[in-house]
Image (cartoon, rainbow, N blue to C red):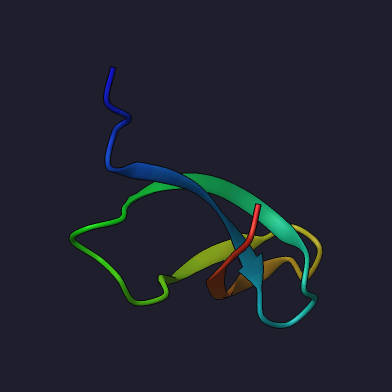
Length: 54
């Protein structure tokens, strides 16, 4: 059975370096690092979260 194109990644806060979110990403379509603005409960505000290793 073939595996899917999606891999599990973690989103790491750029301010406090805490991994707050886990999501999946298509390996073939988006080869660059993912950056999203998400809520960080430790900082209590929206910050930029970058893709990190699981």
